[in-house]
Length: 256
Image (tube, rainbow, N blue to C red; front, top):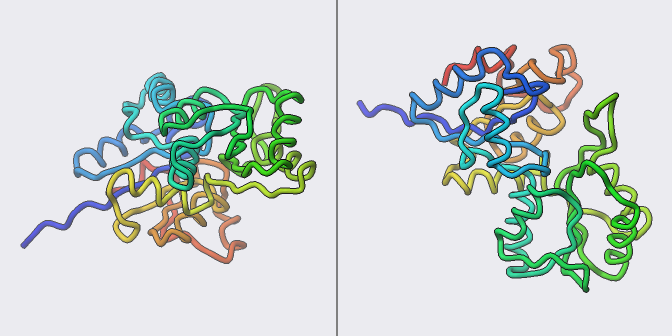
């Protein structure tokens, strides 16, 4: 009898494998089980600030051995999306090295002179000059793309405005709406699947958020696993009209 092929896995990073820069107990063993089974997997994040190499290095500091080729970011998804829409195009970019590297890697030119796109990503600091320029370019006809819709994120001393909140400012000032590529848009998950030559019916999405990871997986036609090691509590799940296929306390309990 032929042995069944292992499922593929798309795995959210923060709240699933690490939290606050510390590996969640059992995360390393979970990755080891995937490797021993020969399962294809990608670690996914909506954070566009860092390159896969940067994130691989950071994860290694947490004790997780994840090579860059096993990491897929919203910056990579955004760059691939615009390159399929308008190959060899131009973009005005607000973001950090993860986003600019991804866009350059797709053959794009970054410019503030009549760009095809204005691309907004996460940044440690957003300047009023950049936001003003982006607003004027979008109002003049540039297509407005943002890496992720997250309105806030963690920072020193508390929460800080994130890409979604900054995009709302440009939207309000320019009168144009942003297209968000990152989760929960199933586009990001489909681009990730394409990068490992996988199909949705053979893939499991593992995440800690109902409003990004789980809904994205459901909309992409995947089996979904919610872990309770991040922001979602078990009692929160029932209020959502969509449900995960399985719920575990953490990835330590998942047996591929």
